Image 1 (cartoon, rainbow, N blue to C red):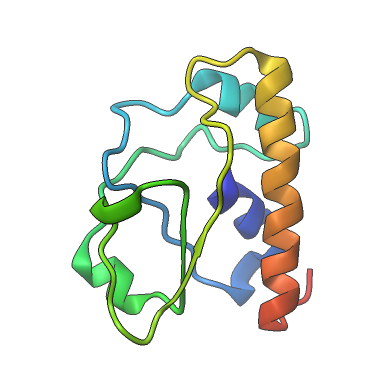
Image 2: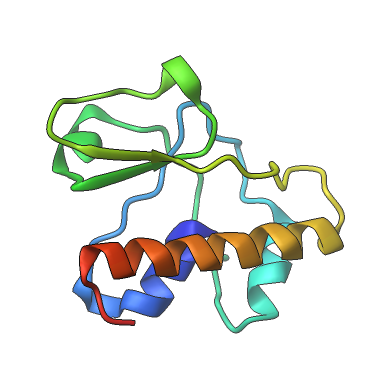
Length: 116
């Protein structure tokens, strides 16, 4: 959802990579539905495992509770966003997570000087 928000808000001003330390096999259909409600289509997203190449290419790495399993490289800005995991949650909970992610993405963009 964070990658969907950032692509939607920043457009071509940023390169967005999405991944995880232990990604699910499929995208969460409830997250897809929640994002559809705000006009953002994330259907084509697929869970990816973090790679060293992606982390090294990033200026900012946002983690969501992966702890010691996330790769850490000097010179990168890291933020850990403690959020409710939307997996297995009803749409009402996922909407709240979606909205909190949107707020945090907007704050991140502001801190980076990215218009949106």
